[in-house]
Length: 425
Image (tube, rainbow, N blue to C red; front, top):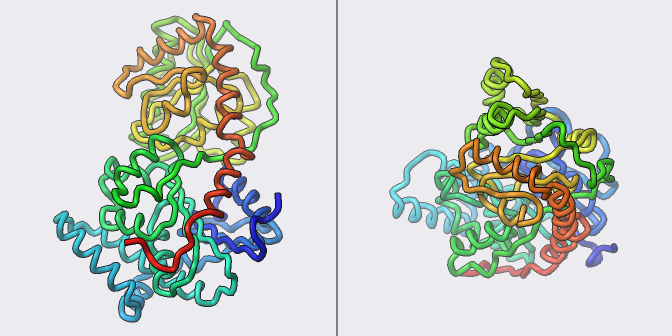
């Protein structure tokens, strides 16, 4: 595929990428974008730890300027003193927080981060000679507002596109972290891409008069070279996989109770492998490994570099992928499970029901008890649906999440977002 326009430039705003271990979706998506834009600059919002990879694509560079501006106060203060658009933004935020009677520190810190980002973008946009500049934010955060303030202040015809996933999408469920900025995000963005239809509907309702700026665009993943036979069935044991950060709202101990029920109540031989660390990992290890259960083999791998997770998926057979989070967008780990033909049994949250559908597994109510989830797994195996769901998982992945399909859709949004010099009122 050739670039969609000559002399195109993309600023790719990420969380920490390319620092730390590159996220699977960021590294794969960046390679695609590098093939379709003449020049790509990666702008992490946080520097994280470690060093970025020594080699990126030949037309890809990175800068720590955005991260530095977003964590300092003086760029925000200076912008307020020198930029009319920044002052108008600040006054709107002040009125919003006064109406909501919200004087917590965090909303104001996000306002300052947005102004810090605006200071960086205004400086860089003024120096950018490209007539075809797109700012693409992988997360729906303060950087969107910062880019929008700079664009409005300079009157440049720049596209601003953002994705929205989970914490940055379901703001009301996360304690309204973006309460001061939400309307400003919709005001300044040209297009915001929710990663699920459920998320799109949620954002469209929240956006009000800006609802036409909201669209759906699934994440894309490279298709793995399958080393697992989808027609194989292994009735002698149940092999369960789970992948998630170990945090209270992810409910990984709940998954332990599920596999414990399988082993104790159904007297099945069960192997459970969990990938993912987090603040609750030590407590999980004490729970799962401190009191061995007959017929239950538990292996907790902890944190695994995203680029190495595929090796685990392809190294052995898994009957089912289990997920029990209370809050989700569209989990990347579940999309990867579909790619490997692993059926999913999950409790409902965010866009999970549309991800699994009716042919790739089973979605239960979020109030389901561990025994009910265990029953669903046993039913999947005993009813003869397991092979059907394995093929259904692969079909679901190929239909919407394979990289060539999903990224072509992303590219169409990056190319077609309305590039205006003024901000919609």
